[in-house]
Length: 352
Image 1 (cartoon, rainbow, N blue to C red):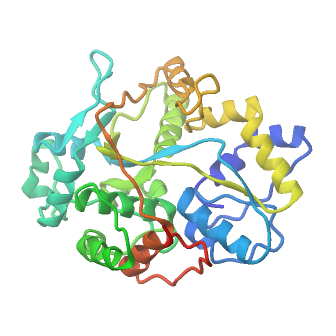
Image 2: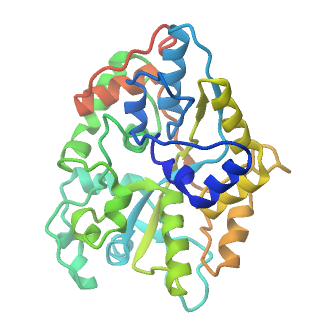
C-alpha cells in the first residue's frame, strides 16, 4: 500500500470497516515497488495512480489472474512549500496567488508557472540569487522541487511525466526513441536534487522541512489533511506552509485492485459507502460528484469552509498534462532513475 495507507490507518475508517465485518492489515510500500512484489497473502493492493496500477493489472493478466479496479477518490499532484519561498517565487513572476483568499489573510494557495519554474531550475539559479533574503531567509541551494524515490514512488514518476510534458512543449513521446530523448532532456532536473527520502510529505510537515526540502512534491490530500489537523489542534491553519499548484495539472487516482473476493468486497465498500466517502473528504481527498458525472465534488469545498479553512480556488486556465503510454513512461523512469525494469507483459503500452 502506498501513500493512501493513511486512509486505512484512520481510526474512524477502521471502525466503519469493522462495522461492516472487515478488518484491514496494512503493508506500506511505494506504488511502483508494489508492482515488483508477489501478491500472495494479500486481498487488495492500492497503488497511488494509474501508471503503477497498469503495471499491476498487466502482471496479474500475464499470470492468468483477474484484478478488479476501483477508484473511490483522487488527489492532484502539488508542490508543498513555505511562505518565504512562495513569496520569493511570486516576486520573480514564477508563482501567483490563487483567487479566493479571504480578506485580511495571506494566500494559502498559489499557481506555479511550470515553464518559468523549470527554466529557473535548468539555469541553476539559487534561492539567494532569486531574492530569498528579502523574506528573511538564506539558502544557497538550487531552486528545484524534490521528490520521493523515482524507482518506487508514484508521485515521483507522475511528477517526472508532468515535467517532461512541460519541458517538451506540451507533448509526450510517441515511441521508445523519443522516450529516451525526452528523458535525457529532463534528467538533470532530477539528478541535481541529490538523494530522495522515502516520504516527502513527512519531511515537509517536520520542523526540518524548511531547510531539507523547501519545495516538496506531494499530494493535495496530504497538505489538506495536515491543515485540517492544525485547525483542530490550534484553532487556525498553519500559515507558514502553503501550496503550489502546477500550471500543468495531473490528478492521481488511487486504484484499489481487488485480488480476492474479500478484496473485492472491501474495494466496493470504500467506493460506494457514503460514510467512507465522507471520511475520505475529511482526510483531504476529492471524490466524484454523484450528481454530475465526471465532475469534482463540491464536498471538499464545503467541508473546508465549515472548518474555516480556505478552499483552493483553482484557475480554469491551467493545462491538463498528459502522461506517456505506460511502456514509454516506464522507459523514462528507468533511464532517469537507473531503476530496475518492471515486467509489463504484452500489454506494455507500446502498441497503438
